[in-house]
Figure 1 (tube, one colour):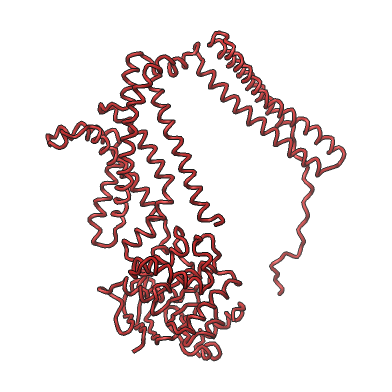
Figure 2 (cartoon, rainbow over the protein chains, first blue to last red):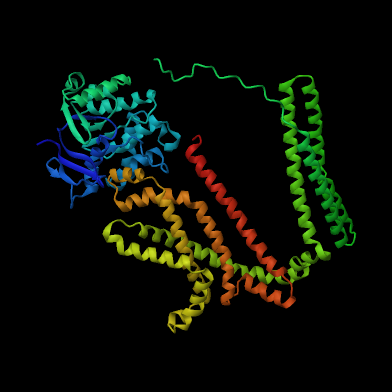
Length: 247
Length: 365
């Protein structure tokens, strides 16, 4: 039994079917990268795992417990499943440390002092402790994204979903953020990430899935997908990526 | 690449543009200036006549006329630049001529602006002192103001009290109605419907009608509670009913202007719907709606004058008694003045709040 099991998940917006039966298992401590063109369903799949989107059929299980459909304690699920978004989505009316402390104090039920201490520790480890009192609008994109990662980590999730977290960043800021993700991967955090950073995927992923039009077309170890793709669509996609200088 | 994105033919350079004309604009500024001064002279004479050639009024008149000469001065400056432009152009110094022309045109526009403003002020003075000071004595009769001022000011506290209590109630209830209107799912549907109906109904009925129905009507129902209660409280109730419907719309606009990603981020951290509302959505929405909210509050303050139609002794009601007694509108003008005095500081205060918030979030730490 895999840690995270995504089984035949279908998702549509009205008549437009975005996920057409996606099946994917993520083992504990595994880092799975989703690659594919925009609109292929990467982000939607992540949002479904976090139950930010309803699914029409199929099941998602975490440690054998079904987390989709009626009767699931969504708030409890989301405590276990952290997500970081492409556009950071920090709360602009709160300082950095308040952003980080919000969920641990309100949802995790720990004291303010403890949450602050833990939050400062996490900020320290991503080099953001001196910005704890700043507001998000005063930070660069890379700094905001580092705070967003810390905000999700503060709930000590058992699996992290990263939704193209470097796509909105200036090139020279991407490195800092990826460095943190690399550290998390080496630390053994289970992660499912959608990314356009092929080089990074190659480096950290234990498994790479190529999504095309709402289906996983090809999956396998990073080396196999990038160097010897079997499907024609995967080959086309990768050759376009190479042409744009991203690989 | 055979089909190039860039055209083979180089783009031809434009001919150097000549300096734009100055003298026409300067002339217009001068004409306006002369007109403004003429009207101002007439106005100054009326001020002096009204005050029976008093020294102070004569001095004021002279100052007004002298100030009205400023547009002439600027227009002459513009003419001077015009001559300079012609000289430079004859000398073939194109760039210098363009610069001088630009300065001259700027000055011509300045003279027009000042002349127009002077004209407006002069015409206002003409209006106030028309018919031997008829306007002045109708609206600003000092002796009538002296007699009535104290009583009106005292009654004005009722307006302030009603406005303050209603505003607090509206602030809280408006948010509540807005949140009810946004309740999710089928469970929220019945309450949503009631909230929508309430907003539709009370935004449709004029405030004066709601006031009349409630303040006169509720005691007539014979219900003991309504008969024992002070009619000022009924007035507060009526205004609150009306304004809560407006303000709930303002809140709703604010809440729905927060990007859904904020709510997604909060929910993804495990915050419940109500926690998300309380800690993420409402604080941001309230900051955004402060200016429109204050507009509604200023409206509310002004509408406290409507209490006069249901016989509550507020400022307008009391001023009306004096107006009838002395057959002069100055007491009513006092009421207008009082409303101005309390409103303007609020507008400035909100500007300050907005600025402070913007600075704190975007500016250097």
